[in-house]
Image 1 (cartoon, rainbow, N blue to C red):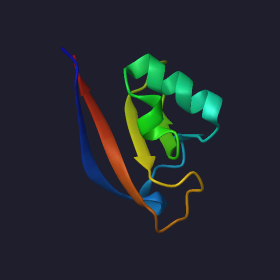
Image 2: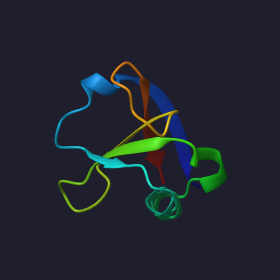
Image 3: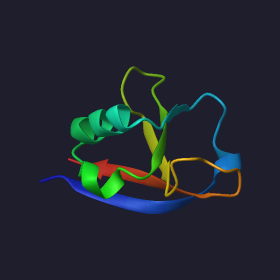
Image 4: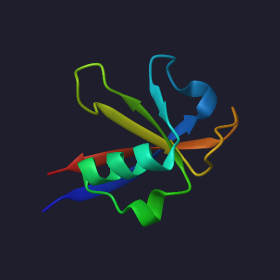
Length: 80
């Protein structure tokens, strides 16, 4: 069973520069499909992901599809 946990991370200004922004609906849907999230639940957000090892090492998101510097960011942790 897959368990998804969300926790407070910080703010957009705190995200490392090497994280990739995912903000188009096609990319968000693809990410959700890949990690087992409901696209309908996350379609209005933007994601920031660390893919340094070739997979999603760290997944962050904010509840706005335009990431303002003071926007609250959450981390998604997935346990398989």
